[in-house]
Length: 113
Image (cartoon, rainbow, N blue to C red):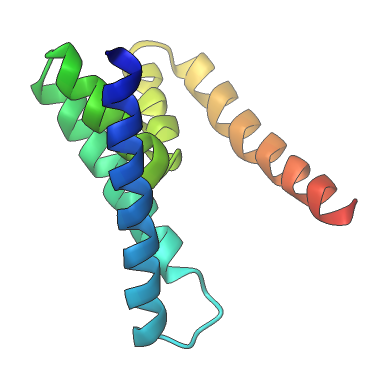
């Protein structure tokens, strides 16, 4: 049943991300990725709120892992960074720099191949 909850949330999250992207593209003809920025920030807020206010496993699977997992992975990165910032500043800095640095390098290599 775990996979069903995750899959259902992921389906809804992916559809919502696509819908938001389509609507926001109509509002702006800029090359700046406003839709991605919006869903990433919204996802980070939502996942932080969820984990701070619920421990119900089914809700976490459906909304946290499923919905926000497909809506954006940026939300998970930021939740992990908040947790590290509260407990371990050295690992926080290492994770922050390595996540974005390696992510940029990987994206560049993928783009270049």
